[in-house]
Length: 447
Image: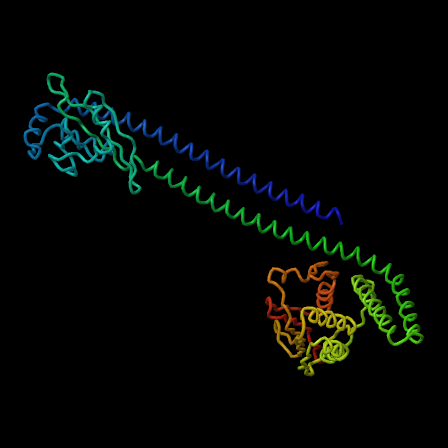
């Protein structure tokens, strides 16, 4: 049995290790993609800047200073020139967005597509101020790549000179949006892969948690099975060795009762009760063994319950507990009567222990459909202290008990017996509001 948790722990560690490996691979791959995108963007930026500088040198040589002076006098004055023919050709060939001319203060003198207000401060300079000022010193350069609403922009700036080689204006060349298609596609691909990676990571985390939960549950089941097997073997071997001395002790006490006073009989009664308790404990362990015989027969659970209630009623009344019986005949079920008696007795004893002082236990039988099949149901409801919510999931666990001297076998064996009969057991309880235990057994199908 000790090897089972070890193997399960190894499998759990392997699952965690594999999940971590996949997570590391995904994160590393995303990191490399991000770095690659940054390098690609930088490369594209440099290529575009070189191209804009090349175009600006070509345009500068075809722009006359006289035309610039005319524009300075009246920016709204339009006169077709050879420069504009070249502008039109370059805009189409180089996929440019616009060509414009600014004076040394940044006011628009000319805009090929008329998108910039003439005679007004160029709005691009809020972003391209450094590039514009650098061009005023005679150095052609370009702005950074800017992004807005999935649109990219980059503008090249080149100085325009008069015949004395003084900078009198600045030429602006705005790259067309088509330049950035490949960058846009790469960025969308990176975002899509990042989203898929995040979804994969979340899925891996969820699957890891699910697998860990399944492994933990399987581990508990295997440990419980191994424990049951070991306890069953021990119980079967020890049962006869323990039961025989208990039987002799009980017969001896019963014989002794005939020779003692009535006051001393209270002691013999106490001894017999303790012998019965020990014998019941032995029977419980014996029932864990698959070798213990189990004889099934058709019976009415109401009759079996009525027999146990009749036996327990005097003791319960003496303890201040009233028994309310609503036992009606139900269709027969195939059960092992002795096992069912043990189950009912155990639940009634639990109900008795849960009631402090006066109280009530209600015993009721009825028919209930479950999964399309009729079941005979026995309800045992008490007015005791109830079961805390945190303990409801533990009550069927082996060795779990809230009683100082409890063995934890009672409800565990009860559930085992019910399962062996293809039945069900449900516990409905709230703290300080009592507990109701429902035992259901499939009714025998009529031939």
